[in-house]
Image (tube, rainbow, N blue to C red; front, side):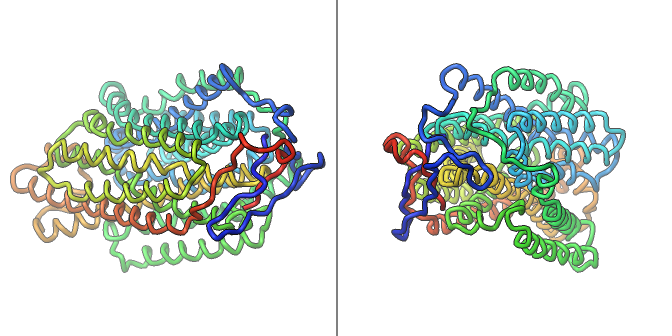
Amino acid sequence: MEAHDPTVSSEDGEHSTVASNSNPEKQDGFEAEPASDSATDYATGLRLFLIMFTLSMSGLLTALEIGIIATAIPAITDDFHAIDDVGWYGSATFLVTAATSALWGKVYKYLNVKFAYLASIAIFLIGSIVAATAPNSVAVIIGRAIQGLGITGTMNGSIIVINYVSHPKRHPMLIGIWTGIFMLSTILGPIVGGALTSGVSWRWCFYINLPLGAPIVVLLLLFLRVPKHIKPTPATWKEIILQLDLPGFTFILGSLVCFILALQWGGQTKAWNNGSVIATLVLWISFNIIFVFVESFQGARAMVPLRLVRPRMTWINALWSFTSNAALYQALFYLPIYFQSIHNQSAIISGVNSIPFLAFFGVGALASGTVVKKTRLLQPYQLISALMMTAGMALLYTLDINSSKARYVGAEVLLGVAVGFGNQIPMMAVQGLSKFEDVASSTGIMFTAQSGSAAYFIVVAQSIFANRMLQTLKATAPYLSPELVLGTGASELYQVFSGDDLAAVHGAYMTGIQDVFACGLAGSAFAALLALVIPWKQKLPDHDSQKAGEKGATVSV
């Protein structure tokens, strides 16, 4: 790969240290980067287009599945009568995604990139088959978890492949394009899911992945060729297994499971002072503390190597990504609930009315890729993104039962542009300023922050929504059964309730939705404060202006 700048300015005026790769020997187990572009084999022209097309198709496949479950859940519960499992249908995927993001970074570091990427697609398709043929609710959850493992590998792999097969100066633009297509594809999820569930069966929400996934595998086999200078780190199978850090994975997965259980029980099926709720919260905190100690003990074998997290550019971007994504996921999941419960829209129509948010997310992602490529600046755009997100979430928070279409579409446009504009900048920063041998692991860390945000804030939003809705109902309509209200889908309110009962449920739903948006508003405002901590003078390397003698250098941040 082309080398990074020999020095990169930081906010406090210091320069990053440089590890010179001027000699051809291996460093840290990796093949040293070639000294000039003549030694590389970057994809260009038609081959780059075909690779990006294939990666975009993979993104479409996984993004489709992330959103498709929302409209399939009512039909699944009709078949299996497992209301208590509803939260797990959605969270199982994000749970595994958050726990395995860093692990996949290790996989791509030590194994062949092309075959690891193909394996992630295969795992996703296997999960789809398990969910589609599920004889009971537990099997659906297991299938969704397997899908989450494949989705993580595909998302990590897509960014890593872009980083490896294209010239570094193209990375911001290509990552922006891939992100925009990925997020635009999520809008198809609820629409396709609603159409398949209504017209055929909820099982086809999973079966559909098979005819879509097969061409992707063929395209990858035909067109994905990793440059010759990209080679896996030499290691024995025993060492690779040790590098996967299974103890760390166990504790981070356990902590997420405990957190989800606590918030799904607390205030809904069990009181907050119930022993089970308290125990799971204590275990959640304990497992997180143990995880940090395990990672410290594991050293270079840690799934989240602490040496990679210590630099300010890494940990602040990971934290910024985690916090700012609260707005993304809470708007993504609760705008459809607002449309269906308050405005009595069908699943398909609510999906259509969510298009402005996701379409302008794509616009923002493309715009950020363009400006970062031209200016190489990072922090100013993250600050602008966070401030715009705060304004967009504030507009969503002001929505009420009688809000017009113009009100919510305007809020969607502003929020969509804002979230899209900043969403992938942390990934660009960490990849662009990492040592060559750390790219895969750093990518895994950033995906852990992003997917962890989904796992946490979706569950937090569900807990806020359900608790605030039940509290409001207890005050305004104590005669209504909480179990009946919780068990009624957002699109079924008008069939189950009427008159004053419907008005009371509407008011309770609106209170819950507004408080979810308030949580996203707080996350956006905190992201704006975090942006002030990001080194504001830091720039991505200027690959066009490097001298030939500097092309073997790598930045250590």
